[in-house]
Image (cartoon, rainbow, N blue to C red; front, side, top):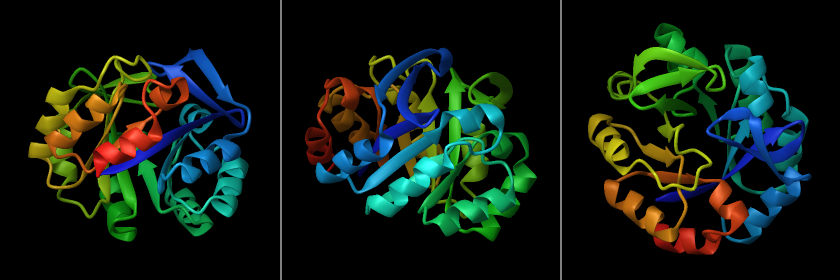
Length: 237
């Protein structure tokens, strides 16, 4: 199981939103590149990056910072946030990202998403962000009628690298992950599942590993010290 420390970018800085609310932000680091370097020094080999401005604007906004990370930190990186056309996907992969994360456009236009998966096989990650069983989009600002398990079953027929499942109500709350829904997704979808939202302690990581997930994304807990990266990496082995 892989551990993905998270760097959420807003105005070029490393921040965290509580339950995805843009008005409820915590600033953790002025220099996200230095933060990525620290994660690498502590043993992480993957980095999960979210362009929060991009998610809201519908196009990547913090690419200069992402480019600096790619130049200076020898980690595998994935990026999500505002990626909604083929040209942007191609541009990001050419920059050196290992994987590109699609959410809003994928959920809103399955036919287009299917085409992109075949155009870039096993380089795209589907982000399923949900309140309860219903999917959200547009930087979590819009609630949809899509159902998370149903969409995951459908998408698992495509050549995708993984599905990231985020329980929005737990994200940034340090309240523990949604183990039940995560396990349901692992059983429902024939692709690697990566869990996000609410991971707080090393016990959370161990419990998620028992569900069969392929990876765990950890954000606020690392910044606030309720779990150390070394503990998480050890538990994932």
